[in-house]
Image 1: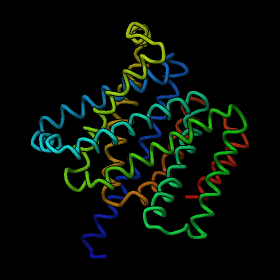
Image 2: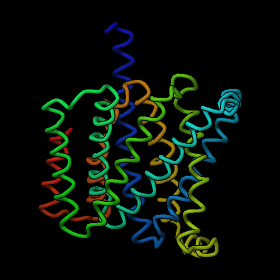
Image 3: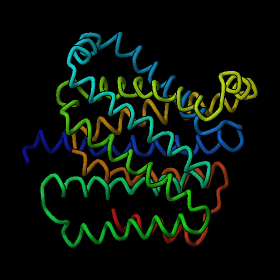
Image 4: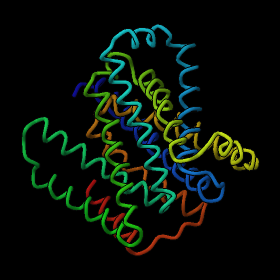
Length: 295
C-alpha cells in the first residue's frame, strides 16, 4: 500500500473508531430518556431523526447545495437514498426498542451481529462459502445473542436482530450504490437522515400516539433531559456519531467498518455502567466476551 494510501486508511480507521465510540453516548442517552425521561422509543427516534436530519440539511444547503441538487436530479440516486434513509431510521428505532427492553450496553452488543450479516452478504455476492474462521465467527455471534437475549424477554433477540440487520443495510447500501464515491459521505448521510425522518412520524402515529402526546412528554423535560436529548443524542450521538462513522466506512470499506464498530459496545457499556449504574448479569458478560471473540 503506498504511503499516502496507508495514511488515509489509518485516518479512516481513527474516524470510524471515534464515530463508533460516540454511538455509546447515543445509546446511554436513549436509555436515560426512555427510562427516566418518560419518552417512548418511537418518540425519541422521531425527534432524533427530525432534528438531526434538519441540522444536516441546513448545513448542506450552506456548503454543498450543488451536490444536493445533483443527487436529486438522478432517479436511481434518489431511490438509493430512500433505502439508505429508511435503514438509518429503522436502525435507530430498533436500537431504541432494544435499549428500553435491556440497556445501552446489551443493545449495542446485539447490534454487532451486523458484522455477521455483512460477512454473509459479501460471501453471497462473491458466490463463495464462508471460510472456517468466518463460520466460527458467525457461530460465536449467534451464541452471544442467545446468551444475552434468552435470560429475559425473548423480544430482546427480535429487536436486536432487526437492529443488526438494519445496521448491515445502511453500511452496505451506500457502498453498493457508489453514493459515497460520487457525492461524499456527509451529503449522503445528511440526506439519508432527513429522508429517514419521513418514515418516523407515520410510525409514531400508527402506534396510537398523537402530537399532543409528544408535546406533553417534551414539556415535562427538565433542563438535564433537554441537555441529554439535544447534546448527547442529537449532536454527539446522531450528527457526530453517524457522520464520523460512515465517513470512516467510506474510507476503510464496509467489512472493516462493521468490525471497527466493535468499539461501540465498549463505549456504551462503560457509559451505561458509570453514568446510569447499570448492572450486567453473568450471561451478559459471557455474551459480551463471545461477541468480542467473533470480531
